[in-house]
Image 1 (cartoon, rainbow, N blue to C red):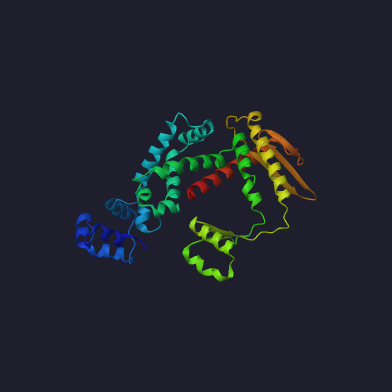
Image 2: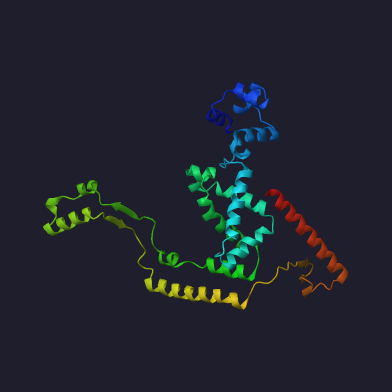
Length: 316
């Protein structure tokens, strides 16, 4: 459902007044509000500019109330603050600088679309309106660094992604614990459970003391057949693995990007035969093809790869 009527009422204007402001017939505006007819894209944009909101928000398909231009401007300001920070870590700066050279506006627009879906932003009008960019400042850096690590293929990104894919100590320790945990504050209401006459004097006094000290009862079930010593051994192995993986950064520094193509032909005649070329080197050559034929299939592979990339980008 679109937000045309909601925003008009917020602005406290009538359909007649809006019609005079925008030069759109009152009857047409009424049909738009009741969704009896659909505005053209340029009309959506005109209405969005008038109300000072994003087109997607006006159409009811996004929670991003501020305009795309305002959101992008806010993101750019935060981004520039990052780059001016002399204490920014080397790897974080490298990730941020990558986007400075690679379609920054598009990346930040996508970031802001995600930002407005975060529950903490949806619940906070200052975060939502970007009057307060504190949350954006703390969130955007992580978004960009995470995106860099996922999208950009480097030695260090492979090492870092592998490091973070290792189960944490908490993941291991919580194995076998069921999700039936209860937490009950010992409030005055809780006292009704106890029958004083059934308690010893000592227990009664201890319970009174607990009620006065803001106590909480916690209980949960767990599978006792899973050995705690096993968890300790696994965590020790994973700790060693983390250290060894991080040490690989010195052994395998990042190199300048060099994207090459792997091309494979599979022929299923009497037996399955392969030809495979990595970059300019043949890896398997069971088909005995001429160099001219090989180059033809390398070119065809390249054409189809570019077409797939183009279609994928068009969907974004």
